[in-house]
Length: 381
Image (cartoon, rainbow, N blue to C red):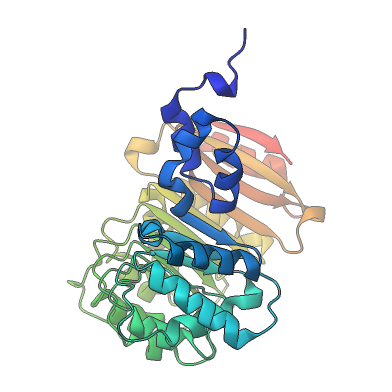
């Protein structure tokens, strides 16, 4: 006889319940006595609302009970699409936060993100939300900077991709517990990143889009960011890319485990030798990262051999016996030519993917790898 859900140990059911929202837990709780026992107080840990009526009913329940059920709430999500009075809804949300002082994660759909931010910004000064780690990140123009300032000591995540005003206005605050930072479009990112890294020593994830070849002020090589574990960078610069400055920045990330970089094809006939060598050093640095991926777009066909040489000639000795998977991507699936290289896509395997069209011949790539005596397999999309 196969295993049924009712035959699962109570501990397993409890683990499943930890990942459900309150509306789902309410239904789970009514299935049977065993499931009701498994739900327990978890019904109040992850709280979600789909209508204003649900919100009001929950607030009334919290107000009518002597036991502080609201203090159990850790995650609160608003997925409401319509309210009759924004002002009244703000007051409801403020009452909710009054009953739920230990909320750590607050999220919302795009429809009511501004309203939720307004509710957070206008909370009475005696309302305690000292554990708050995230707030809605969809809209920023009016209330985001106020919320960031109000909860700067507890927030662990900032997403500034849609911030139209100066990002420095937000990042001028100290975020001692910040772990994830998404900057979006960034001009001279080094100045901005260095200022936040000096204040947020626990930052683990950083993402930014580079829109200028000027990275910013050069800082002493002794400055390192040991907490940063993951970096994502999208370069929108199409010429005069400064790989020397990029390498100077990357060398500070002494404990980086995951790297994702997307750039335009920067190699050309007029490439200064120091920049060409710096690009080679950049590829060598990517090869040393535990989980690295680089994507080069708008690739010039004549540069394929150069990229292959740099990738293959900078493989660390302890990875030389890894198998290389060559993936040929059909050009009809991509608007631009693409070269993608991943250092860790499977067990002792790395992947080199290239758009296959009239300029990229399979035999050319495979013959070069055979010449280098690098073991490889071929996969055509």
